[in-house]
Image (cartoon, rainbow, N blue to C red; front, side, top):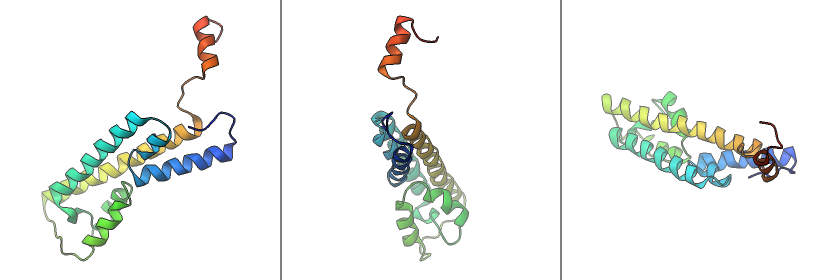
Length: 147
């Protein structure tokens, strides 16, 4: 977590690194800002959602050639999607019908949810998590602060 006395540039660099780690590993940004339970919950839920989409529609749902508009939100999930996209670029994994649509929906939704988590973890890294420091919380408990 960024310190209160750190410069604004340092906090921006930390927030950028949190965003990068959050993109590489879903939930990794929360891990860097010391919210380990939230990081684990995000990692497990988004990974299960993405893998469910791959299971429903096969890896052919990650198609950077024919379904480019689905590929963009899928790519926000993780750079692993680029690796899967290179495998499926040959076209040997055709997917048709409802399973393809549902698989694309699941994988795209996992990417967009990860985007929200990246923004939130970066905001926590930049501005703090909203928890008061010890001095102000003890003052409030003693009735000396604003209510």
